[in-house]
Image 1 (cartoon, one colour):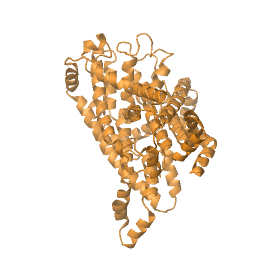
Image 2 (cartoon, one colour; image 1 turned 60 degrees about the vertical axis):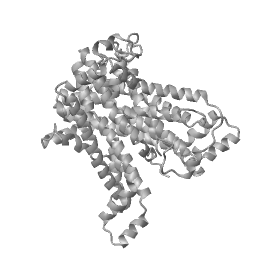
Image 3 (cartoon, chains in turn red, yellow; image 1 turned 120 degrees about the horizontal axis):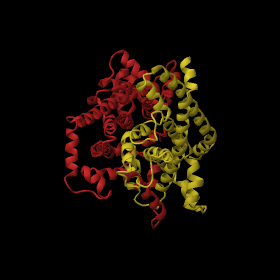
Image 4 (tube, chains in turn yellow, red; image 1 turned 30 degrees about the vertical axis):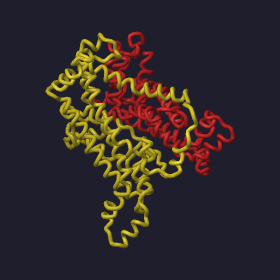
Length: 300
Length: 242
């Protein structure tokens, strides 16, 4: 089911009737109030950063915190940030998109193929393989980061783009979701019919399987995109030169440099704002494709 | 093997494990209960602005942990704090656990809320109607009917939150330059990182990772098992009723 209720494409009639359940008259004041309180709690930090980024360095510490400044603060801040270390910030932004975009796409393809194979073919050791993959979900990142670093150091490719992308191509959780989704959405009878008509196994995966799995794959891609975009540890460990940092590591290093220099605060604040905007935009524009019910494995 | 015995006798590590458990003891119940509360409220027929609040509460999920920590870091920092950082020392030894936990909760509530809300929407409406005809109030329906029915979803959220709590790293690591109360070995993962990449003792770090991974595996199996025995029955009932 999507987060966005008015535009829900494929839901069962059971749920649809539920939405249309006549609302009783009047507003439940307490629930509404509590919900609004929750919304405020979640929005305040973002709002504050929005306001703070409009202030110049001196205003940041002197003016009332919740009042935005209508001077040229924001533009100056962005200009300052762009010129910081000869525009390295935009490099970070580009890198984040590169890591998350490429990583997300390839990881989704890998998950789709693996999930499809696990769901649709009977072979020896299938359950064992699936369980091994599932166990991967439980392994903490840091535990993996150390051997991954050593491995890539051995082949001499740390501090490069592949060093960040390669370890994220295999996503156990995505495989798990794809397996469930392939089992539910690709009927065996359709595949048998395809086989009768002489379609190759590859053709059946690419023409039938992928098409039927598409809605689920979008969710897997978005989840993976966000995971990589938000990932801090792996690039933090792998990459040492600042022109290969993604935003998370870049802003962290900026804060590190600026911890005792209050003048860098407004740069970090503006950078934080700019880095939140693309994900939120992506998120809001694609929200109708989110199928969170996939996450619980509960398919109708 | 020397590395392993060094790990077990490392007082700093045990301190960091304790710290992690302490923070987890705040984040896990807070996240799950808040998410459940919001999900149930969203599902209340007469609540208003639900579309807006649902999105607003979900939004922090899209904000990277490090960025979230930067956001909150500035809210905590005495010089810039709009929430009374001049009077409350958010980075003091007593408050810092709560400060870190708050960031983790802020980021996680929305996702868990949506998972629970989704499974609430999946319940057949007849259950609700039947309970109402039997004279149950909205509150009673929520606590006695809906909560037991979505137990599987709650169990899964709890497992995810526990796992996330065990892997606490981004928040304290990012706050570290801002606060004196956070050492370089504040939680186990920071300890592993410091050993491996600051002190260049990669073997000790590897040994610690293994011990830690085994610990996590044990905990998650335990939680999974508990969830199955405690809530498995409720889940089965829910399935039968459909």
